[in-house]
Image (cartoon, protein in one colour):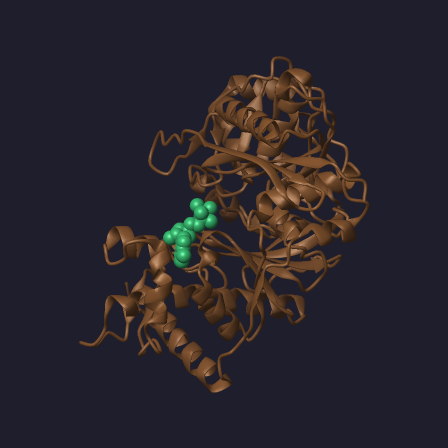
Length: 496
Ligand code: ADP
């Protein structure tokens, strides 16, 4: 082990975090700041890329100064899919960034689907024609602003996801680069070729010359410019947030996976060197192997996870704090047949029913607040099982366990119950900032802070494992109850 410390920049949807992580995995300094969200029209979500840079640079300086040590490498992880266009000379953004949540290209996606492009797009990119991804956002920008389209054709414009924007600013414009995990979210990247694809670029109207070079997630992304952060340090790692978390959870081998329980839940399952296409509506995406080299993963998301707890707290007012949900769930011996299907915005994988809506079933005069709270937590476990099963069937392997993180993973009862429903051990690491840790790992491997992945693995504190303790017949009964509730919700959707 060579030692030293890594500065990890975690540029998220609502804020930027910076952590200085030592070679033994200790956080020596940290800083966080939110930035403004812009909603210019219903369904539109924008960020000011200049503000993102300012805030990120500020928290980076604060974290480094709090740590009081020399930094040997910088790692970047980021909100995925959000697109920025900027002037390659002045490094000024040319318009606001269009955020992953933005739905303005729904009509464009529908037109592309109707024109029969979905199959080609899906087989090359592993994604769907959905506004979520970057490609149609770029096409929209160039259709909306002919001047930017002209600049793009002449090369007087640079485009990329947030990682490449930060790399450009960090290096004072010297490097325009991204990594496969971010590139694989754009609808412009062929997973098999590991490169931008001309047919996809044509479809989205994006000239290749404006896009970043694709470099390995653990690799050379240039050196920070002294004016940018006040330090000149190599940038050695870049990965999208979910893949960085997968890496920071040590899920480097095929068959390992993690779930992040926040507002929604994101499951990623490493499939190693095999690019698995899903028969159950999951996405195929680029991930990292132990050394940050190329690997594939299946990805599935549950739209509403912790948000159901938020709803019970803020919408219904029957829960004081999210954290109280744990003792309320524990206060009951069972769910007494009460199920909450939190299909507030439709059902995602593996059902894919945008028209479904939430239901609560099994109510009696004996139903209490505790039942509803417990049902909301149980729903996260059942949703996890559905996505995990779809992944196992797609990949033809059985998972040996699940690693978890995110705000709702603080809830021990949730993790005990999830282990029981999955019939698998569920492990929560000591250090829950797995996204930043993953970026630190990728950068520190390249920068020699860790001699190899085994050294980095030793720095990942072990945390706590929750064993599966539900009797098989009890598990089957609970799952059957959930499936009946979901069936009911789908029937209502079909009738309305
Ligand atoms: P995000 O990154 O999506 O904003 P976080 O990872 O910060 O989300 O997690 C916040 C979510 O977790 C909220 O939806 C909240 O309701 C839920 N949550 C927080 N603490 C708990 C808890 N102890 N038990 C269950 N849910 C929780």
